Amino acid sequence: MSLIVQKFGGTSVADPEKIRAAARRAIRAQKQGHRVVMVVSAMGKQTDELLRLASAVSEKPPAREMDMLLSTGEQTSVALVAMAIDDLGSKAVSLTGGQFGMKTDNSFSKARIRSIDTGRIEKLLEEGNIVVAAGFQGIDDDLNITTLGRGGSDTTAVALAAVLGADACEINTDVDGVYTTDPRLLPEARRVDVISYDEMLELASLGAGVMHSRSIEFAKKFGVPIHVRSSFSDRDGTMIVAQAESESSPVSGAALTKDEARITVLGVPDVPGMSQMIFSAIAERKVAVDMVVQNVGAEGKADVSFTVPGDELKLTLSALEAILKRIGATGLTHDADVSKVSVVGLGMASQKSVAARMFRALADAGVNIHMITTSEIKISALVPRDQAANALRAVHKAFGLHERPSDAKTWASIQADKSREADVEDVVTRLQNDALEALTLTGISIVGKQARVTLDGVPDHVGVAADMFEEIGRAGIFVDMIVQGYDGVDGSTSVSFTIDEDDLDAGVKVAQSICKTHSMRDVRGAAGITKLSVSGIGLRSHTQVGTVLFEQLANAKINVEMIATSELQVNVVIDSKRGDDAKKCLQSAFAEALG
Image (tube, rainbow, N blue to C red; front, side, top):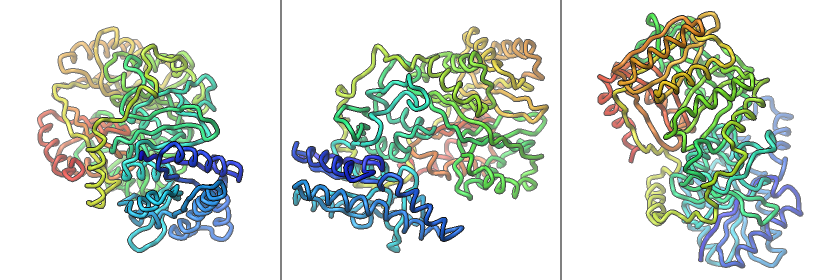
């Protein structure tokens, strides 16, 4: 018999009527010949109520006790769902995370899954039961109850689907699929039938609320097809699989991360080891850094800009202030009133002028750009928060995301990966190694024969980025990395981009023309650089990746000239003479993750 995992979020089990509806859906799937495992979240606003109670009795509740408290929400839900299934004439057994064998580490409120013992679930399924499993929770080696953090029920569902070798994982929620952007922000957003794991990972990390990035990491790692659909209808939703919806469209989705904060460390000595010290201090506070921009230094100094969630700004500033003198930086600046707008798509890796198209759309909408960072499948721009909604609307329209591509695939045309059996064997191996949620790197690579061009003193005005990259595009120059950050002089910015070494002279010539047109301060160009990329699954949620990378390069006395990060890659620019050395030291440091 085939096996499906059905996850029901809090809005899908918010009251007795909805609980019975979820129970009927599971029973219907069982009668169609499937073995069924349900993963259930806490009812509606129950978690919010538990948090309110905790704050009423304690100003700073211990993390262990908070996990003990919050786990009761799911325990209530699974018991009620099992009762409803029994009342409707079918067999069900409810299980907490500990009861169905979810072992985690002891990081309360942010626990990582170490292993899942499937024996009890499989026995109950063989006996004809629908297994109703509590999402969001597990136990550590000391039998303490732990919770997985935001999106924990999604993570539970996909992890169970992986270890059980499920044919599919259904995410039943209050929306009917994945949209090109949040339909609550843009009514013209379009539901897509198919989206790739990589695109969904980037969108999830950017705040797309349909699913959490950790659950997509599991699905990508183990080839689990995910079907996102509405709890309240039988309409087909969106399939999250290896393939993209369209091969011709450069962009598949846009996202807005509203509550961002920008921090710039000014005057950092441009010598090996500085990035490692900065990001180690932040990682110790368990803050997830998002956009990271280190531009090319001038006069022995560089500026490092990055974003963090708005509610972690104070914690991050505290960590940095403690090391500012030690690293020899001249100061800190920050802005808590910014948002990030991003576009994502597998197609942009092979198409020119995608960035220029985005920047022109923002310029035409009167939106100023504070920071830029790019990867192979994502472009992000930091914008003033009061312009964020207009920015999202502008880029969504510019890439025609409201229109279905002519070569769009349907969800029905996507079949499960033929290597499924090999994936299940891989899961078993990882379970035996007690490392289900371990970091998985897909490669460490170097791209040589690169050059970079830097423009200093770029006016912080609307439309400048669009003018720059349109002119570069007209010159026929293909741009790889783009980073824009604050350069600490009169509020201006600096922009660097990498190009093929053979295009350096042409790139500098275009940059000098741009410099003159916009009254910029200087143009610098250099050949002999290499882009070093670390690619993998879980780079954002495993905050130590950047720390280890920068530590290894510092120990090898390799200076980092530029940095750009994404959900799937950490990219740095270094001297090409040290490219092979850098690759070897990182392969050694990440040998276990490379597998």
